[in-house]
Length: 291
Image (cartoon, rainbow, N blue to C red; front, side):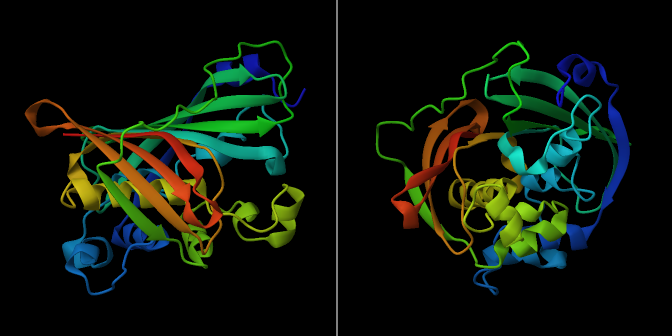
C-alpha cells in the first residue's frame, strides 16, 4: 500500500541541522514579491541588509526549507507519486522573533493521517529549536489524491468556512510577477510543478502554478504592511488553507477583517482571491494573530 498510516505515524522524528543568513532572507523576500517600488523605505526593510527585518513566514524555507511537503513524502510508510500531491494548508507559530542569521535543529514527524476516501491528508509537524530554546513550530497539511481508502479516521472537515459577511476593513491588490515561481523555488522548493510545463500538465494543470507558500508569504507581508505598521515581530501565529491555485502574472485581492484583543494584540481574518479569474478563492480559513 502506498501509505501505511500506522508505520508513518510510528516513525521517529527526522532531525536535521539548518542554518541561514541575510542572503537567504533577502532571496525569500524577493521571491514573495518584496521590493516594489525598489526605493520605497517600507520595502527596504525586506530588501536591504542594513535595515533587514525577517518576515515570520521565512520560517517555512529557512535552511533550505524545513521538510514541509517534500519531507512528509519521505516518511517511512509513505510512497506516493509527487504529481498527485497538493499542499493543503499551513500553520506557523512563532516562539520568538526570527534572527537574520541563525543555526537551529529542526525535528519533523507526521502527527496525523486522515482517510478521505478518494484521498489522504497527512499532517507534518516541525519543531525548530536553537541554542536559546524553541524558535517556531509549523505544520504542513499534505493532500494526496487517490491514496485514501484504508479505513482510517476522516479527520476535520476540509470544507473552507466562508469569509465574514460584513465588508472588509481593508482590501489590497497584489500583483504576482510572471517569473515569481521561478524565483521563489530558489528558496528550496524544487517541485517541478512550479516550473516545468510538461510536469504541470501531467499533474492536471495547463501551466506551472505558484507555490502555495509563496502566496502564503505574500499575504502575510500584505497584512503586516497594511495593519501592523510593518512590524514583523508582532506576528504570533499564522494559518491558512490552500483553496485554489495561483498562476504567475495574476493579481491577488487580499481582504482583511481586524479584531482587536487585549494588550494591543488581536487577530486578522483574511480571504485571498484571484482577481483575473472572477475572484476565485486561493486562500481560505486564513488567520493572523498578533501581539
